[in-house]
Image 1 (cartoon, rainbow, N blue to C red):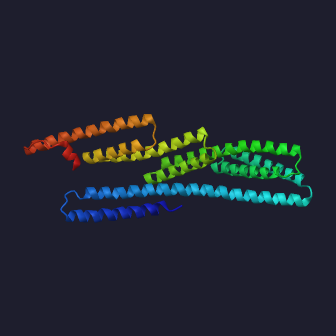
Image 2 (cartoon, rainbow, N blue to C red):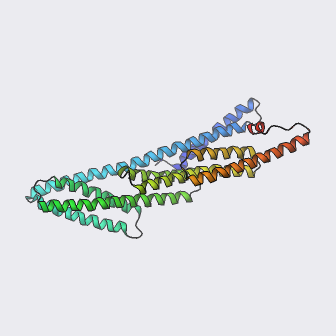
Image 3 (cartoon, helix red, strand yellow):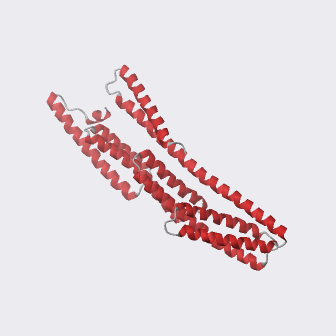
Length: 317
């Protein structure tokens, strides 16, 4: 994984360089509020950098999960081939295959019990899930052996059914606990870029499980919950910026930040109740700030003895 601090430092330096370059160019043209467009351009650069990193990290995490699956599949096939060749050389192929799978089933049960034990980490469920995949692949290879008796085939198929149930159980447990751990970590982080990045990793974990069980309601609900969490982070970030601007008396800037929050609120995945309540709250804050601007305009115009200035013209500035 690339360094978060290094990447954000480089993006910050690029945004700062762009800010000062534009500030100098606009000052040279006689622009009064040159820092406003320069600051907006620098903010756009930072937001694009954060969004690009989200996409890259999400793809990298998914690629890592898929690579791990492929390595496990290859090792499972190689183990199955070795066990098949050794059993044929021994002269008692069917019995050896049955013994190997009986031993593999006992190992799988032990691993499953360890993963389900209290205090186990999500990685334990992922390892049990991978062991189930190996067992199922090897059992499928063994069923192609012509020398197996009817009883041994029935035992292998019974083991496959049990392994499939454990396969689903541990994959769901791993995705739920790993995504919850990452989401809790994101909630404790300070920088918004780190919080979004960690939450995107949690979403990648759930999506990797959805590739195996795409119709699982639990996974779909978890995916929506994490997406809503990411959307709430972005909306809360712009609301916080608006509140800071309003506290400092920059009412026009606060209105623009509240509009940015409304933009993310409309495009991100958030709950309907939260969307409605947040939109109403932002609308009330915008109307309150507009009223404050009108009062300030009237006070300034009255002190200078001139006609009232249009609020719309003030907001465009």
